[in-house]
Length: 268
Image 1 (cartoon, rainbow, N blue to C red):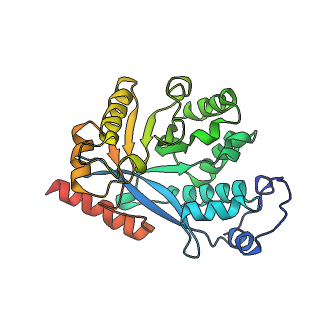
Image 2: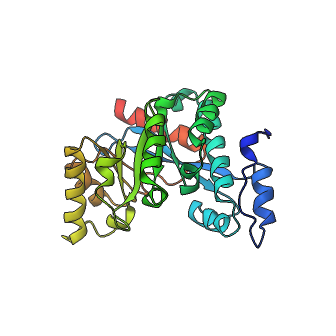
């Protein structure tokens, strides 16, 4: 379903090269949304799911790299957010009430009026803001941390939770943990790969979880692929995890079955 809104016609610098295939895919609503479950490491219960984009075999990262090369990043991001909100707003049965995590790009928060746009989209979708988590990366903060903080504070006042994503990569500026209106620290998968075996990553991840707890932040661990990794992060107090140990990126039907199975297993 296509809707023609003023917010769709975002002025952007004209790229030197156009990607007409990607432009058509966005216009024709051909970008698919998948969801990776986020589960409690102790009970296995599913708390929410992160929305991920797929198109022509490309992952979310590959798709956004392609969009960035031709000036389509913001348009693609808003298309994905709108579509995911619309889907989650209609969830029933085992998916009813499930949290949704959306990834933002720097261009989203750099644009004046983004918060108004998001509120309008949630209203149209019938989506409760209290079910939403917005994931931002440190690259979103190079614009102007004060402006970003103000825009995020307004959204957080509606009940939306804010997570800093990929923590542990780049500079991982600790000042952001106290200066921004955050609810969740999401630890990057790159620190999880060598978690078992006494590596330095093990020390760092354990310290991050402890620090987040002291700051009153929830912790989500990405990239959990083994039972040994899961046992460690659960013992250290991680709140949620996601990774191929339990599920990759699922379509809506698969997500519904996964959530139902996790609840049945818990009730057994």
